[in-house]
Image (cartoon, rainbow, N blue to C red; front, side, top):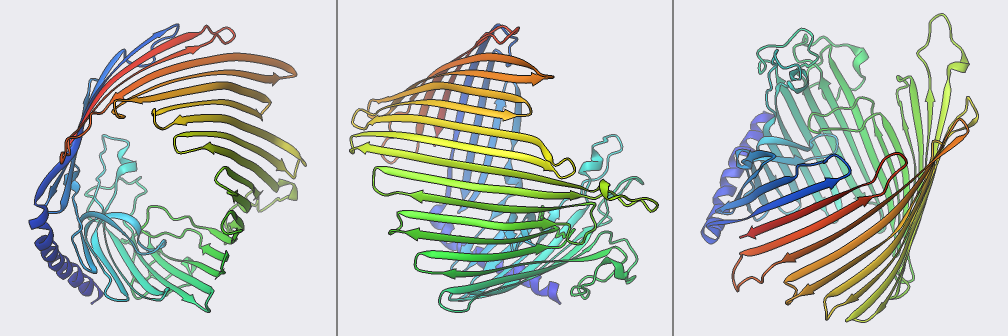
Length: 577
């Protein structure tokens, strides 16, 4: 009965919608075509080292989209002397006709019901979304996976083999003044006969899944809201198993037993996420709780993070008319909820960020985060011997500070800007068994830049100095150097030119058994590029672009390794229509 209702919606709705949409879209839009074709040639030459790429390479690429009565049919190709590729995405077509509050999906598409039922999984089939007045109705039916048989001559076929999987789903919701009430049901099943031969050592099994989600978002008072979502998933890991052979060890929930008959391989899982928030005139605070049972699986999602519990609080404050913005986040995450694993982890997360824009000249941003984790490793219990010394507590702490200071001045014609960026990260690992710091890492990154723009002359000049220092695993590295970039536009901005140059010095110090080894190296690279794009004619969609670039790289000698240089030149042309 449930399937017949869904099938009726999927069959009747797209036909009616397509008739309405085609009646309005087909006459007005007709058949149009757009896209681009580009070609490029790259020449490369190296001295001092073996060539790292072909001395001459050329490429031809095209992207064409045919719009047939409002429906897009993309087509693309690429060809080069290094290989060729041909693709025709129209073999996986997607039509989405719509009329007023109704939309249909036909072909290769995806839909989203909730995070723990149908969550963006691609399928080939049909779907519909209806939103009359305050109601929200979604339904789908299609093939989630195509059958991929085993090939005894190809060892990799064990990883690629798959049963054909079909699924269907229905979601019904009601929305009124920010309040939401919805229920979603999703079901998917593999066809065990879709693969003719299954090797005895294969681990793949045909599965079946039913997932149900309930969601409520309700405003309690004028500024207080609460939202709760509860999901249950039943998974049969092998549909070939004996029916109605109930095993109480596989789970305690039987909410879905009427939709998926119990078997020896059926397991039940649940997930819950809830939030409580308060919204004021210039601040917001929200408390969230999320718990996903171990091994939670839904065949309507590619990946679900399970076996975890999150508790977070997130306040946001605006001060002085929005000139100062403060955001913070603090939470605790824990896994191994059923204590079945040999190790568990507890993670504490905290961060605070501040943004200040006091006037049109100054911009200030800063932040601090403290990400710490605690892991307890417990070995498998020996039935004849155990010792507390086998238990290992492992701590890891990452502290990060970052800041940005910008000062802008000038007018509409001439602008100057000075920017300072800095970031410092401190990471440490600690074992309680040794009661000492096992690994210590420090990273410091700074950058100072200045930019100068003259709008009437279309000229821009910028310069910067970078400094980076790291200390990790007995290796200290220092990296620093200046850079400059100049760009200019000519002939009413149809001709654009640019010249850049960077020089960097790197010093690395490694300590091995008390002996320091110092390595110095330098790198200089410069590039010049030019692009010409003539103006389009009136009421014309055609455009041309011609570009060329030359880059030269010089690497200085490093210890016993000699220096080398590389020269790369590129010429390209693009035609758009």
